Image 1 (cartoon, helix red, strand yellow):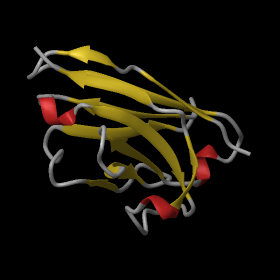
Image 2 (cartoon, rainbow, N blue to C red; image 1 turned 180 degrees about the vertical axis):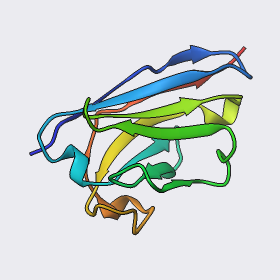
Image 3 (cartoon, rainbow, N blue to C red; image 1 turned 180 degrees about the horizontal axis):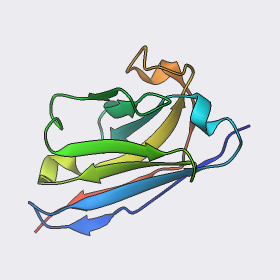
Length: 125
């Protein structure tokens, strides 16, 4: 069993930055790829970013590439999402999720088997 707990969300002005954290329980964290998804009101959950088990490979959605950075610290069982140059359209609940494999073989939600409860990010002036 894996438990994921996100933190770091909040209200930020356009152009600002936030860093989300996702703390994982269990000794298997370092064996699996991890991802971040988000869901805005009235919209489907969408892929944001993912990182392989060893942080050797990262993937990003086109609409966050160059602004967001995913990273992980296996010693701390934590995955991060650094978000810069935030835009109002980045407003959503952000979820971290555990991939079913060590490497990122898919960016669809079905490829992730454990999810956190989400953290709200609101970008507004």
